[in-house]
Image (cartoon, rainbow, N blue to C red):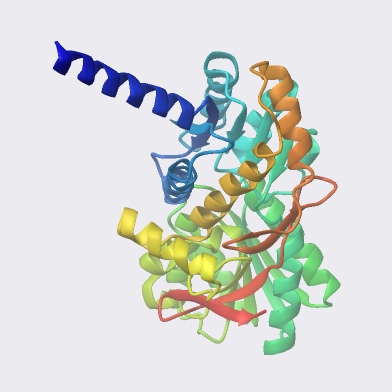
Length: 378
């Protein structure tokens, strides 16, 4: 009998301890492309969130509350993103949503979150107009409009560019937005645009566009594409005889290690822009890289890093609110506190939200050397 009582007391004590350790759950939806071609971005993003959640919960959670990530595959499709968002908001009753992976999907699904006054936080959406959807839309991914003009200016200065060709995907909001920004930046620098060539997601043969560009002899090719198309374009360009002296300048879609994996040596010398890179000596970044490799047996990429930072950024806001259990009030309180996040020191450096809930963060111009992104210019 005494043994039974002791066992009961021990079990009851453990239950009470667990209850005191985590007073409540903070349910957050994570909508990412985990299957299909866009999984090259979505899986590292999920991994970044998972790692951050484990660290935060392992350190006691947020004001004693445990983060519960509800993760769903939106497949990189607009319709799926909308369905997942509705599930999160009306069935799971999440306090906030991260995702979706593509800007295309964000333009479709973010209005659903905004209309229900639920914070939606993009970590990989860089097209123009994302946060203009409404006051509940945030992102920590630097917009193409902020980073691409910097890249063009730096490359022009360093390489003495005069003539440029442009390629872009004309069936996607992100790649089309990238083209618009590239063109504006190139025009602003007084460069001549020799040709503008388009393609669609899923294309595998770019020889016609690249042959035309090759014959015009540009100094550089500015390309707005997702990584699958970007890799094949770079690879085919070199096979067609476009020399390495013709520099590829990529948009945000180029910022994946898959580019070098697929294109191999052809990817050497490709230039793009990002606030983050793997070898950044920042102590917080190196600790993140080490933890990520230990857990997932691979290096993180920019998108994993931005997801990791995003959950910590949201955690900063959650620390300052008292959850009431009234989901509408708690969602509003989170939105209000998120707008106040300033100078958060993350793996990508100091971060703040601007007045439009867009990212304020220093971007770097990067170049691929020996298969890895490294700094081309601070």
